[in-house]
Image (cartoon, rainbow, N blue to C red):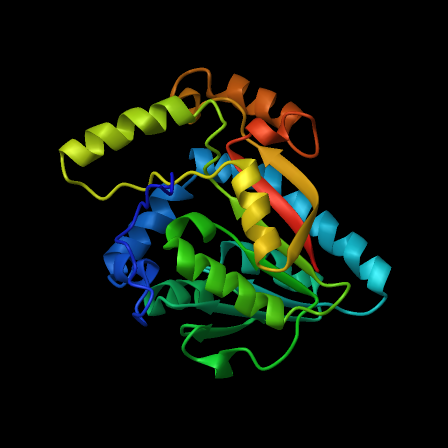
Amino acid sequence: MNRLILDRPILNPMSTTSSYANRFQARDDVASYDLKEYGAGSYSSRIWELQRPQLTEILRQHQAAVRHSLALLDFACGTGRVLASLESNVGSADGIDISPEMVAVAKTKCKKARLQVGDILTQPELLQKTYDVITAFRFLLNVEPEIRRRALRRLREVIRVPHGLLMVNVHGNSRSLRHPAIVWRRWRETSHHTDAMLNEMSPDEARILLRECGFQVVRQFGYGVLPPTLYRTPLRNFAFAVDKILAGERGCNDWAIDMLFVCRPV
């Protein structure tokens, strides 16, 4: 049995509508997500402070290696957080998301990126070129496993071989110190019949998934070792200081809550 518990309505593999789109069709839901999840001082915003410079450095190193300007695709770009941060570091940038409301917010943040709304599995015309770098953040845990695989395989078709890079994160590690709290919340949310975002995946599960879809993990980073609950206490600054020390390519990245995998096409 698959150990992942989906945090959004399960998607019928034959359907053209994703659970992501169902959750973020309403403008108020998108605004709430953008303000609460990544609001000032939130746990996610502090982790993003650690991730953002690392992504920029990976792009810099990659551009130096290939010696030409980079074409970037931010898949499932959401409200444009990643795309707006990276677009100035590449020659061209595209963003695609299945939620019109998400893309509408992204357009207010991005200055030069080309943004599109649609489903890459049912609208092949959305991807008409190849990319040096593809990013996919907070996507893997938000869709049904079969759609996850199909999307990764579609992205594999449009990444440049052999030097393209896929940067994908898993924002819920089942080996992390956060896991016991997630187990308890699953029980609580299930008993109250609510729709909570409680997906998880282990590092091994992520590597296997990526390998099955045509990608080899070449680097792995970890962000956020201490439980997020500490960020809602007077110990928040201490927790961030510890997580900052432990962030990156260290021996503890298999236990970090948020894992970033840098992959090459196989």
